[in-house]
Image (tube, rainbow, N blue to C red):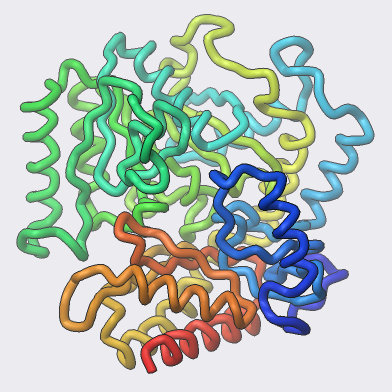
Length: 448
């Protein structure tokens, strides 16, 4: 795996976490930055690369978060840095809608090639995952002439007004920010660990629950789009049972509804395929991407069937910064890295390592109710022993202990009881093993 050659790929703690310089910087942050911007671990990063974050105190932390699935090729991937630097030398901005440039077109060509399906496609570039989702909904409504949008329990689609309406979790994403966009409907998610019925018939039962609810509450003829994360992210890395996603997509086709796959978190090799939909051969009408697309630079996209994408009138899509040339150059470098290093295969190797080690922890501690995920998008759901009652306090404690020992670990889940792991796909096995040793020790310590 290619990493930043200047940073030794080893964990090193020279101070407590956070160290004195980070603590000093954090006081400045609290005086300057809105309290509404939450910070999970206030260690201030000075350099980063591969699987290591170096803070201002000289500590080297193992990165099991990747900036929430963004730095899949590492924080300073050579091809990303080289292409972005070259573009900076040329120009930083013109606005593609005013005077276009090749880099935007080249990224769209790559997206049209790499996303699921061999049909003719078009793409449009934006700044963030939420912006991509908003535009996907706009496109679907314009194409169908309908207005209703269906989303799911435990979904996360962003923090703008429309995407908050699509997002399921109230706190911290929606509390106090309403009213939200209208004509959005929420349906039950096929969540295997918490499905109330027979686990052997979950695919049929969850599909029946979905179609019945849409028919009764909305009417199929009124639905412009169904939007779903093929593997839910903030909701807790929920992987629906095999076959359910394909049934939803087929039902959408039968009813003239645009099927939108939100692959902002699961896309770009994260789950062992270029896109999570591919594991079941599901081909979405529209797919939204961001996060891992550009090696840490802000870029997002909507890619989809040409007849849907081209249905929008000229200038109906766009934005001042969308498809910024430096971000596009970085994306071309990130995609080149993913292809040359076969990062989908690496994600599958990472999954194997995580499943084995998390399974060992689960055998020792019955607080792990479920191990799930795919590729380098893995999680454990933490519950009170002998039950499915969420234990958010224990989850927070384990994450905190891991952080204090130099492993950056994230939590998630509607109930705050999911420990999630999103290591860079270029991380080496030694760092993975050491990080998992610390996770195991954190469970031991939290439960002692």
